[in-house]
Length: 268
Length: 302
Image 1 (tube, rainbow over the protein chains, first blue to last red):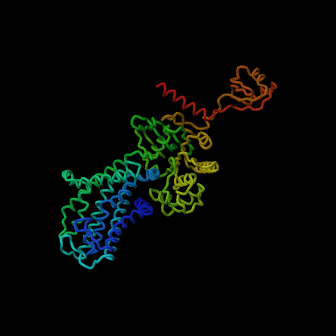
Image 2 (cartoon, one colour):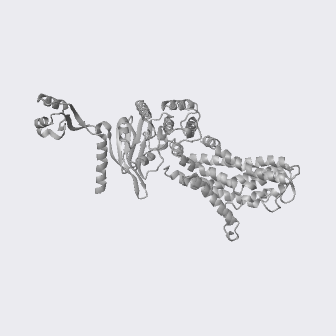
Image 3 (cartoon, each protein chain N blue to C red):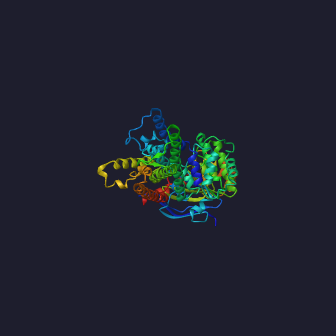
């Protein structure tokens, strides 16, 4: 069943289109930076970007920071929102369930497919950014940490890999919300937009001083904590909190998705 | 054990609305069962409950001798309402994915089974074009092929000839009869009496969530106990038969009795010219409407 879901995912042209768009945005940024040599002033723009001109090896981290606020969660929400609701809308859900495919099994297979997509997306962004970064910019200098000291190549490779995993894990929270909504509605669009709406709301509240009391529990609060991986030494506090918080979101919404889907009347 | 589908008190409520009001279906092995009813009579909800898509509020379902629905469904092929597939993939790929999704789809025999099923429904010629480009009739056939992939013991079909041309309807009907003769029980829902009459051996009629009638088709279409006579000599015949004449109009008489041959001898013996003489049979349509009407009156009185 998992193989079938992966085949469905990767045979859909839309999947590749959204991956291409995800890769295109950082590529565009890299292109403009390389041709104009105008770096954002330090402290403005996406994280790391100001340092990229002097060291292209930082570009994978910068690329993740570029797609993280909107593009990446949007792509994940669309794929996860599509999972059950898309089958319901196409009418194929009833044929899968009468095949018979157990509802829990189907949900698990969908989850694995969404995770595969998320990982593909994050890895593709990081890998393409690595290629661009080393081709367009000077990458011979040792990687500077955001704390000013230098990182060895091994260190920076490990930290970039960890950043990829951390961003992927953050996206799994989005996926869980969209998957839950996907079991509630028969409209893939509504499920995806619902998840995105939650993220936008969370982003607004994170930036709001008055909402300080709820800030630590907002899903997007620790997303950018992967930046801390490039400090020397690594600042683990927010990373750990972010990982745990996302874990709670994933657990709660996946349980809700399961409870709803296994008891639901399929009328589509 | 000859019960293929048996339900006891199968009930589905949506809030205050009762969609299916406690029905006892009885489909036997080898039946071609026609499940009749107007739109909104609870047919589709019943079928969805049989297939595990909708959870019953109350009641029991026994399918192919077991109460464990997932086990039974392995041997059931179904087309529920419109057929559906992934539009950007070819028909064969759709069948392959569906077969690989669940239990009992042996990978080694998959290609052969897909070819056989497509051949059976008359789609053996399809190429790699995506299902999106199929006509409704082709999709209908593809849906049927999907239902036939694993040689099911029971076929559940919702309006299977929808979207087919007369030639296609005939082909599918012949296919269903062939499958049935080879041992597949067929449970077919329709709102078209003529379709059920042409195909089925047994009927169940739903009306407003109740199963108002369930019987062998033959029994329903049985003699009414009257004989229809057509003759130019109506007055003479009426005089001869006296009180046995139940109705007369123009050149037609309805005569109470169970012996057409004997009646013919009496009439001809008396010099009445007979054009046509046959036992009157119940029209399925009348039986169904009467059953639904009676149920409606009961519901109205209650």
